[in-house]
Length: 114
Length: 112
Image (cartoon, rainbow over all chains, first blue to last red):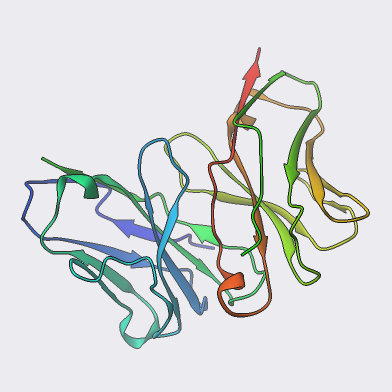
């Protein structure tokens, strides 16, 4: 089966610019996650969707980050305006459900803010 | 939320077994123990999970202590491709405990 697709793979932007990342989860997966992984650290959960509803966004910096999952399939994560500290790999993952099901991760988008 | 403690790093020789420990002394009765690993420049990948009984799959084995306060991920024959960061994660059944929350993991180095 096809895995979780993310694009772009790499992005370089200047601080204060905006950027968007796209994620296409595995077909039929109701749960979608966005993570931020700063170099040398474990992934940090930003937001979690169940179908097109938000389950948890407690660690999403809502003043600059936004995410949506229209129609409960694809998702986009946006940063506006970007800061230097947003430089990280942004990972998307999906799973069949919320509890104790295997999560499948995409390869991530590496963002560099200069 | 229940937390896990893992060594920062471990080394193993190729083709030898590897035992990766994880302590989770505050685990609740409904928390499952999950293991993921992250190879260089890749997203994390699922390895195995269990509740009380030991579990085996094609990738690894999971040994869970009788009191469930610790567990061990066992790679039966380490290969160079097993060099990765291994994460031990607790996932509950309700509310925020269902989150897949990563710590800093154990960096496994496999020596040829």
